[in-house]
Image (cartoon, rainbow, N blue to C red; front, side, top):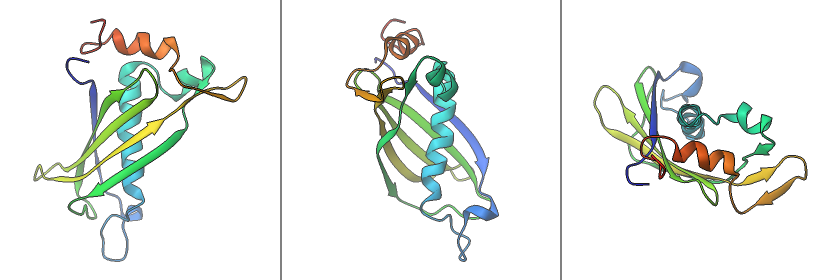
Length: 143
């Protein structure tokens, strides 16, 4: 990929996402990654419903997060998902920013493995439908 394919979403930290210190509980950052990932998959045109309809599932096999600066109750968050790999697995990097200050608060990465739903077997190459959709986008190899 010459230029990265990415997508962003903005949202407000809700009360139910924070601990007693009004700081986002560490596990909720993974949920924020998921919000950005869903927007990215939608941009690609291959969200979870399209995956299932085409006979594929993509379970998360690894996820990591680096906490840099806390997000707190009612902060406005800008979550960015960046496609890193889509041929052998689905690998996505994440950046969470405080939208008001522009400060990077958290970064991370997830890896998802292609699984054929009918057989339940993992595949070490992503399905053609995903690869074709990515390559058709601006920034994709076929663009």
